Image 1 (cartoon, rainbow, N blue to C red):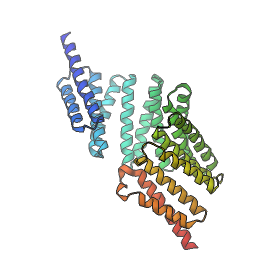
Image 2 (cartoon, one colour):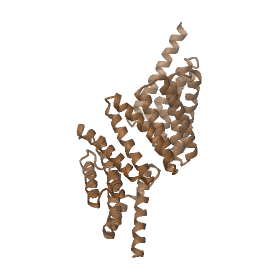
Image 3 (cartoon, helix red, strand yellow):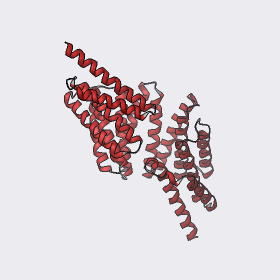
Image 4 (tube, rainbow, N blue to C red):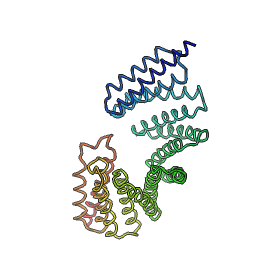
Length: 361
């Protein structure tokens, strides 16, 4: 019928404006992107007879991308309003078609986004609740439609829950969740040739190693960080120009040095040698002055200071800590640079240990 053709044409027009908006935003042309998204929303509002599923889906996507713009600009209140809209449309989609994998995936994204916002607002109780909702959806999704993409989304959700448990000191619970995440990556590595899965597995192993280190299981922490390092060495050997893999390798080497020294398996000299290899990976990367690479370099300085402090070399520890603290620019200690903040606090903790040791002497 003519009305159906008109509705399909109208939907195509709305979808085209939405896709243009996504592309413009990805290209950094935010104003043009938002204008295109608003035009898409206007078309949908003026045509309520468009197929319900498609209409809800398009409204959800529009709100997601508007929220993304505000989120990148650290306008969290504005982002929240559109993330709430995205969640509402995603829930309506699943109510409309409960077993549609595409709609379930959108609801998983929407619940996870709520969890991410709560986590960044330091509301860990709400974040935990939201990610548990996302987890239930992810498990239903992977049962309905098993695919690497759906498995990855489930693993990401589990990883967030692990991070929440670890940050609240629930290390055994965090370990179990990270083990579940790791099992997904191992399965994907076995059945798929995509090297992304090797990257995800290697990074997961490094995170589990840190949980085990904090739990006092130092031997296991060392073995996990070494396994992570082996996977990442293979990736870097495959593509030496991949600066991201080089940085991940550096992080795993830093973890190996820390865990081996803490377990009294590596001597101070051996640990320093491993840290030198980590620094080499950063220097050989294509983009050595990125925020992430600077962060890794400061981690190396702090680990060297930790070793010097334990070895009784107060002068070296003081010099390394002062250098690290000087480099961690105070202007960057903001919500958007929380990793810098945590590293700064770690350096300050070691410096306080150094001062206490000096006073005791």
